Image 1 (cartoon, rainbow, N blue to C red):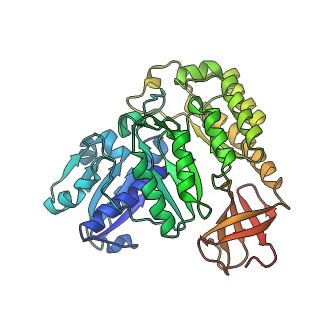
Image 2 (cartoon, helix red, strand yellow):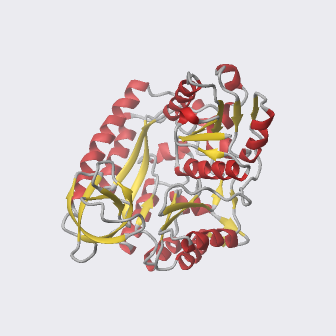
Image 3 (cartoon, helix red, strand yellow):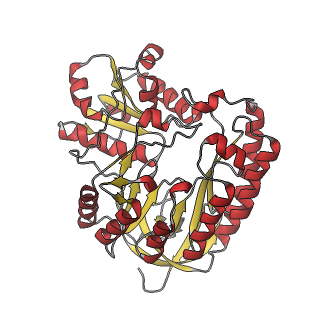
Length: 429
């Protein structure tokens, strides 16, 4: 059987797609790049925000109507876990609905050809699966799955389950294998990596050991973190290791203390800012990004203003900004009053315009600087090559004389905010 995978959502979903492909190939099935040539089509979905869910469901409805043939349509991931059998009733052309903890059942389910939803939730970590890596020279390594935080707006604990951390020796073995196979960057994944804990080992110690395993030839980065779990110990490990990337994604979600409490975030604005200061003092060149929600239930205009001022004060390099999205089963649905959708969008637009200005200013600050970039592959435009800095900034090289995995010293000569252009330093090609 041939199969095609389409992925929506976070990096965890991307890696789950690689795990899914590993399961399929170990059962003798073959991946294809053309959806029209596939006997089975998998859509891996994200349920964190309404827009992502709507896009994925619309896409699977479209794919199910491929006229050339009727492939087996499989909805996977968080939306599958959230809605289960209800999706089979709603989308008549859908054949299978499979949650993120039961991908190992897929070969058998495809063979049985039953129209069924399987959303059992347990402690699956897919240790016996060899993931099919898709993004050489960069790769993902899951260190923990699930979340115990229960932020009032977030559906992740419901669809991904409780936290469970992997054994450190298995993580290190996977990292070493990637390094031995030429990978030049690994990203440690978890819904909240900072809460990693296994047999007394916490995340700072794990990060130190991963850094040792990666060695001089491989970069290390991680996502994502809850600010309340960020410790000076973790920041010190980052600052002391040359192969740990100077990038930190620190989701704030709001700049107002009352809203943060209503969100059940576990920190105040002042505590958050103290941690930002700590990171900047230990790593002056750190690249910071965040998440922010506009229009959380009961958020007043004045409280929203605190989020605006937080963006101005921290001056993030990047920010992922969203309007509040109602999610079934979350506590925020019971918080009144609701902010009208039009007002949420207006507030979102204010955040987006401000952050675009800041991102452009921060981007221009590195023009003229020399830094190493990791070549990731061809850029979108013919004749160009894409690469990434330690801070994960995209840098375009006006040449294709480089191969994925090359580490090239460049001078940044131009920047437009989200894309930078670099010229290789003499004798680096």
